[in-house]
Amino acid sequence: MSLTDRKKQILKIVVDGYIATAEPVGSKAIAEKMPGKISSATIRNELADLVELGYLEQPHTSAGRIPSAKGYRLYVNELMEQHTLTAEEIAAINQSLTGKLAQVDQVVSQAGQLVSRVVGYPAYAMAGGKSAVMPRRYELIGVDERSFIAVVMLSDSRVKSQLMSLQLAVDADTLPELSHLLNTHFTAIGAEEISLRLMNLSDQVEGSRFLLLHQVCDYTCELLQQASHQSVYTNGASQLLTFPEYRDVDKAHDLVSFMVDNKESLPIPAGDSPMQILIGPENVNDALKESSVVIASYDIGDNMRGLVGVVGPTRMDYATVAARLSYFAESLSRMFGAPRQLPNKEETNQ
Image (cartoon, rainbow, N blue to C red; front, side, top):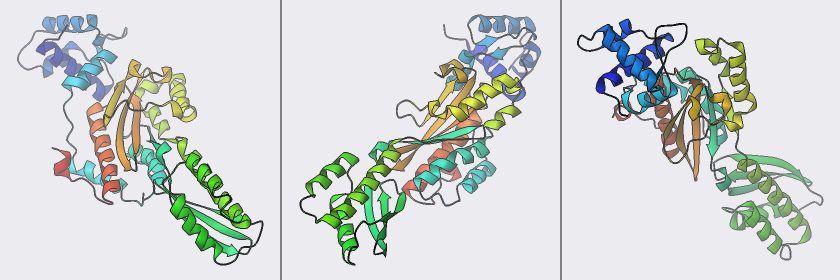
């Protein structure tokens, strides 16, 4: 059953009021905000209909109404006014991104912290598509006759290095030659192909050099395996305690514990949508059934995407959170596409 315009207006007033005050909204407050003159009896009838239809709920201790998950969903889909970022909001987000986030692991580990600070809710961050990470370049740096440093640059711009010991001393030309061999035959491939190519070279590279080559390839495969495991970073979980919904210590403890101990189960956006809002029961995990999650994704490059998510009460200020999170994610995408370039206010508000 589709709602009449008046019912939608009332629903919007209730949601906006409850988001602002965390208090049930009564018919008197609704009448003051409705256009034209509408009797209290008419408003009460409309409220009763909205409760019966499942868009509103009436707490036992109050004559006012609060939104249900169904009411929030209609609000987000149809009734919510788009939040236009102010110059101060844009400046604050841009300022948060002025640090040196040149490498992907730095961005992912710090993005949640920056988002939590910007939106005022707990946040999490992770990167996707890491199975596509491959070695991009190698460099072998001699330390002494019995050791060297293997430097591996990955396709996601991370640079890793490790000190390695040699079983046999090698001459001065060995490391540059093997660096060239690695960069010629062992870049832009996955771990399985690295092992296959190493096996094919076993008869062509003499003993001590092959052992060294084997060490570097094993190290590279370890790096690729580590990259395939998705890391999730959470920040600001304690901010939940500032919301009246989480005054119940057990309720707050369950959600904070979930964000800390089970963060790998936090939602990941479905499909290619740049923004997704999950309200209450729409979250699969029971720990999030009374919370909402707003998720935005951004391009990292090299077939990778990062995502940042915000967790809060269903009474979340969806319009403001979505606008700030969207701008933050778009800014990160631009930083990777054209370093240090941030969208301007005009582009953001189009």
